[in-house]
Amino acid sequence: MIVRLLLVCFALSPLLANAEIYKWKDKDGSVRYSDVPPPSNIKYEPMSGKKLPKPTGQPPLAPVEGDVTSALNRAKAADKAQEEKAPITKEEAAKKRAQDAEVQKKIDEQKQAELKLKQENCRVAKSNLITFTNGGRISQVNDKGEREFLGDAEIARGKADAERDVAKYCD
Image (cartoon, rainbow, N blue to C red; front, side, top):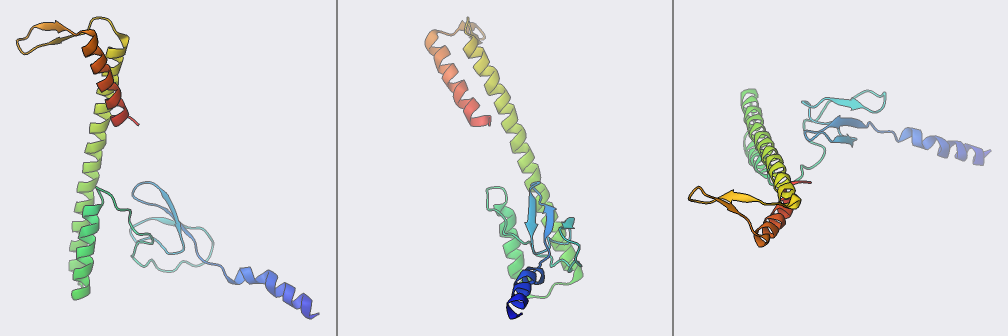
């Protein structure tokens, strides 16, 4: 009888240890799962039908350090240090959120500009590679405005440069 009771207890113990799981997409479009709710400005979906606790307003995962996000992370660290010194009013919090949004907007614009530049460089590099690979007579205009035809060594150098550029700018 005692053995059966212990077996039932062990069988039902996982039901006692359930936790809320949240699913959402971060700013990069990656799907995230966590037992801590995302910040209040992010739409999330509970993974179980339990009652949802209120969001904490803190990110569940540490941000990934990178060239573009490091400026935002430094600004957040400075703001956090300032928050610890003095209590924040609603107006100050709104102003801080507006500044954070402005910094994020600049970072997003910079990412878009870098992506467009990389795509254009890739297109030009592929075009140059096709030109040098097809062979034939290739000409260019010199400083005096005269047309010059490239020799075999210059064509080979141009093809090598184009291959390097394709590897650099195209994924």
